[in-house]
Length: 517
Image 1 (tube, rainbow, N blue to C red):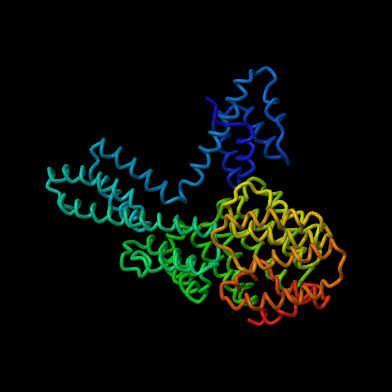
Image 2: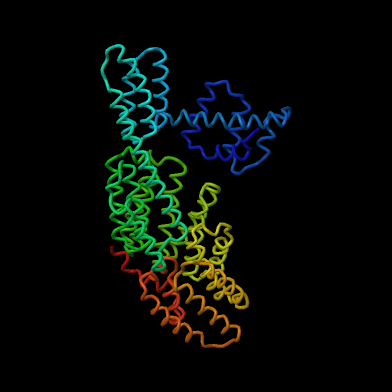
């Protein structure tokens, strides 16, 4: 059965880097690859969009089955070339190949050479903390020892290896335990980014005070230690303890910078930590520091450890979102529009490669930017993209605030008759929410009043906003409610209505000092 579609082949070809394409063509020239496949590859490479015609032109005399096999053959050839191209730069592939060499040498009774390679690869496996490879090498060493004993060659004993094996298994189990814990924390955080209630804080503290995370005494490897600090930084983010969060992030970076090989092993965690430091600077209103952190992340884009398409996209999306956010909050229209233009180009260029979560963050930030600058229809277009998302558990926090912003946008667009239905729908939505910001409910109640006011053509809109501000100030005495401003600055929006001043002008004034540190 053919598992590879023509679209799969097209997407794979378009994902290749220049150096990967050059290597593939050199390999193809040195092999007996069907010229039709090279022609197909060149056609796809030069194309700007997918067309089924590419594949019908392989050869008009070939049957559909042969055409299908041609696509699969080219796909498999590309994968083979990628394995060869990256073989010398991947520690995992190198160790795996050397294990095969040990087995072959063992079969040829080349025991001294087996020992040399085994010792070296075991050392490398320990350096990269590849516990599954270490266990495999220990298994081979047991076989080798039985032969060496017959030749009166003394190395490790079986007893030593059994003890070593037990130690490695414990480290592997420990790493697995921390990995599972991280998955649980990460899933919970994706659904509920910031703590909203005392119950949320209790849940966070239950993690932080658990034996695995209270201190690092139970950590048995450097990889587990990295995950330990990553888990704690996420939890401190949720409860808005940015000082502790920054400390955890810095400790994590220090560990990885002192074990360069682990940056190659865990590049995602390194980039996520740099992005966290950007977010901390933003949340602490330190935009100058934020820019420096963004530059740090930009500097990683050309490094070998982050050369994959997936990691490149992570860097690009993080940088674009960070730049748009600080420029939006600073009321910088020109810079914000340039950021949006770059984002829209990236969404087209990397269509199908940027994950849904990153897309939602892009849409949300662009919607907020347009709202602040008074481009309400444009903002509504992007909010609608978020509201149409089918997965309600994906960035639940953004989807929840998108509903709130949608109310304000309908109000600004004078869609007062629709507001009643929308507000009623959101009320039903909140009935199923375990936790939410009090501010969300307050916004909902006041826009319901404003909607009724506009339908009746009454003119005391300003009075309602003054009352809105007074009640909001009371709600904001709750420390959790301060987190609302990171989603949307409702305080400045209300002030703009009372003073008849554009939101972006108020934002410029409010965050002017943020560029001083």
